[in-house]
Each structure stands twice: as C-alpha cells, then as structure tokens.
Length: 144
Image (cartoon, rainbow, N blue to C red):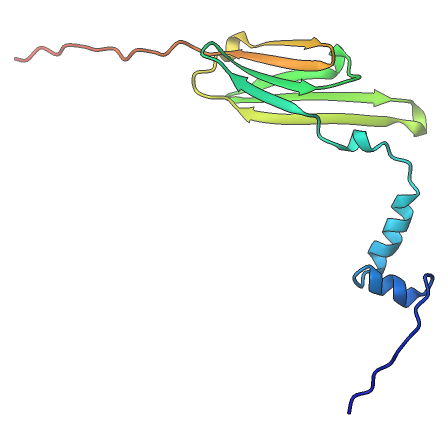
C-alpha cells in the first residue's frame, strides 16, 4: 500500500514556486527579476514590412516610426539586399539602441544598379527596378 502525502501550499512556499514553474527554479527567479525591469514592449518587436511587385519593379516597405533618414541603410551584395536601421537614444549608462535588419535574395531580373530608396511619414521604401526580359539570340548556322 502506497502512502500519499498531502501538503498545504502557500504562495511563498519554495516547493510551490518550483511546482508552478514546471520545476525550474531558475525560470521562477528570472521571471521575478524580469518582471521588475521597465521595458517598452513595442521596442522588442520586429517592424511591419510589406513586399510587392509590378511588371516594372519590386517594392519593399518597412514601418520605421520615429526613425531619422540617417538611421536607414540599404546594402546590396551580389543578389542579396539588406535593409536596416539603427537608432540610439540617451547617453552614458542610460543608452538604448533599437535596430532592425532584414535581407532578401533578389530575383534574377532585378536591376541592382538602379535601386532607389525613400523615407516618407515613417515608412522606409526601397524600389528595385526589373530588367526587361532578355530575348535569346538566334543564330543561323550554315550547313556545309
């Protein structure tokens, strides 16, 4: 015959904390510490972005409210385009950095020499023109 031990749990009981957290003392205390750290939740999210295409161009738009034009960057290496921004606020020990970076592999018909970017009303837009389709050359071979 097995014996059952009944226990009365209290909110501050160490056993209770371990039991309710799934058995992880570290997670319990880490949660308590992080719950007391002031963090602006919107700064921990990835900004909204949208991609679209027409017959003439590809367009990528990224929501960057509060960013400055100087914080924004577009870099292209081979067929990979990286859009990013970095904002730094404050100074000394109370400095905060907010950054975002996303890369896209551009399609083969992208004209990477003529990419344009604009920043209007908190939206960073990048326009990648499409090259016209290349018609394959047809050669006649003379038969001897």
